[in-house]
Length: 225
Image 1 (cartoon, rainbow, N blue to C red):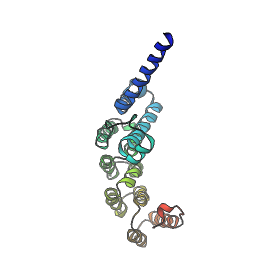
Image 2: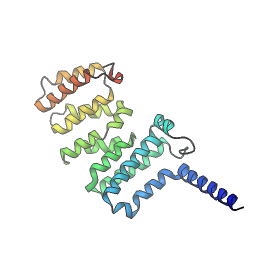
Image 3: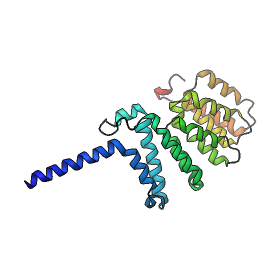
Image 4: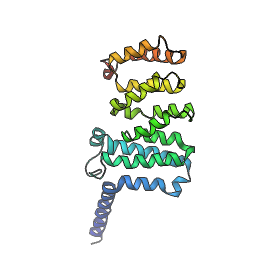
């Protein structure tokens, strides 16, 4: 009788955990970050934010990764692409209210891989009142967006790169991220030619070395380049 009771309790607890993970995982994770115990520990807060954003991308945004790593018993229809925007908006609001961790929130926004995060990162990247370091960080944080939405990110990155009035850090970050969009050879040729008359030796040198490195890559992903 006692063994049967223990078996029932074990099954109940297992079922309860699966239910919570299946139905409320992302909600519970967000509430955990909002807990004062996490908010008061900066290192724990940073780790939690980055881990949370990674979960949003792998479980809610990137369907290929989701189906490769999770099952319907873990993540069901309660974690879908359109719901990721809610978490993106929350991270963006936290970025505005907590300037001390701007870099972390930018990284978290980019980590989500959501298209809706792009507008927030673009706004920072184009804001001349912000330090060039943070603006370049915003551009670099677009990595997962460049991989998933190259058509949307390419115009933003090209605009930043071609604007010679932008800081060197911003322009080099833009062209570096542009390579993740797997641009057509025609665009790469235009970028190469632009180094001939670029007023910044630093940018021109970075572009040349990047294109040379790209041409020497053996990764089949870049074979068409």
